[in-house]
Image (cartoon, rainbow, N blue to C red; front, side, top):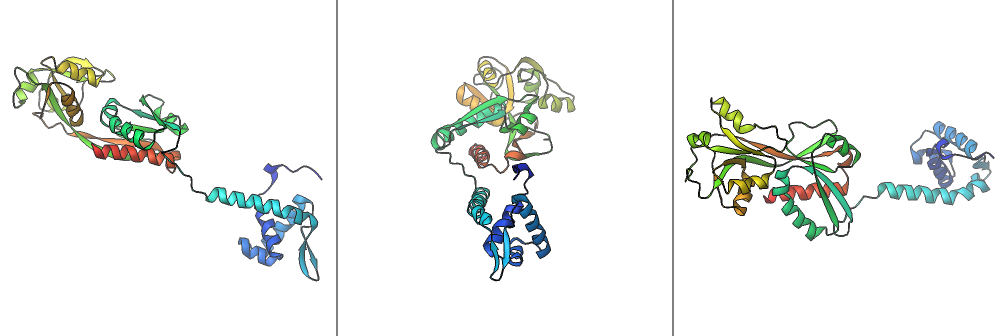
Length: 303
C-alpha cells in the first residue's frame, strides 16, 4: 500500500466514512450527510480507493464493515469529534488573567485625554495586559493588516478598504491664556485674538490649521509667534507668557488643571472634529480586540 499524504485526501470522505459506519446503509448515510444516493455511492468508491479496502460489504444481514473499517472507525470518529468541538468552541478572552500586549497608533490628544482613564481601567480589570502607544507613520495601515498594530485612534477623513471605524467622541476648539494675562480679562475679543501673539501646536511642523483658515475667510490673520510640536510644552510656555493658544476643549481643561491658565471662548466659530478608533477586518471578531475597543469606547464616554 502506498503512503497517503494528507494534502491529497478529501477530508469530506472521512465524514462519509463515519456516516457509513454509523448507518450501515448507503441510503441512510446519504440522508445523514445531505448527499444524494448516487453521490454517496460515488464517495464510497473514492473512499475504497483511498484506503484500499471495501469498507462495507453486502451480506444476507445487510451491509457490514470490514475489519479494516472497524479498525479505523474509532480514530476517525474521535478526530471528527475533536474538529467539531474546536470549530464550535467560542474563543474567549479573560482580561483578569490574560497576559498580552496591545499596540495602538495614536496622537498626543488621545494620550492626554483617554490614556489616563484607560490605564486605570487596565490596572483594575486587566493587571497583566500591557499597552504600547506609538505615533502614526507611513506603515500604519499595513502594520494593522499584519497585526503589528492593533488599533489606530485619531482623526481620519477616510480609511482604506478592509478597515472599520467607530466614533469615540466629538470635540470643539477653545482658547487658553495665562491667568494674569495683562490684556485678556473676562472675554477674548476678535481684535485681541488677531493682535496678540499666538502659540501653535504642530506635531508635524507644517504650520497653519483650522484657525488660519477661518480667519482668512474673513480677511483676517494672526501672528504665530511660537510653533512647537508638543502639547505639554505649549501649556507650560503659555502659562508664563502673553501668548494665546487655541486647542481642543478637553485639552484646554487638562492644561487649566495643570497650569495657571484660563479657558476662553474663541471670538470666531472654529467648529470641531471627530475622534475615531479604526481597526482591520481581520481583528473584527477577535474577543481580545473587541474588549480593547470596548474599554477605549468606555474611556471616551467617561470624558
